[in-house]
Length: 105
Image (cartoon, rainbow, N blue to C red):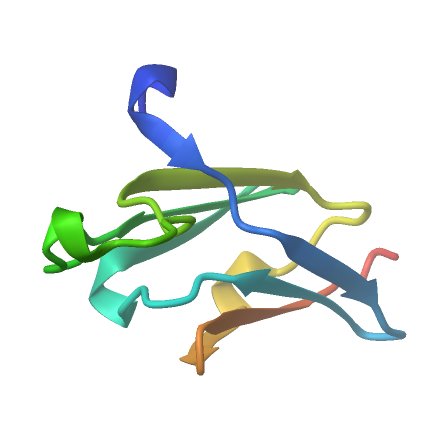
């Protein structure tokens, strides 16, 4: 896991429970797939990644709210999931992770 001193932000998330799945959506604008890591451990999902430095001329910036750096989000899951069957996709800056719930539930 990343040291706290290197974390610059945490993405906003939604977590939905359906009859069969837990579905997590995280906002990661400007992040490429190769810059993301998603791990499911026990009943927790960890999302790590990095927002890259923009190639702007600092003198031309009028407002800056997008900050480069590493991010981490740790989300406790309300139910056990089958992590080996989880599916993740990144579309238009939104990471979606579909995690089938364990059949024990």
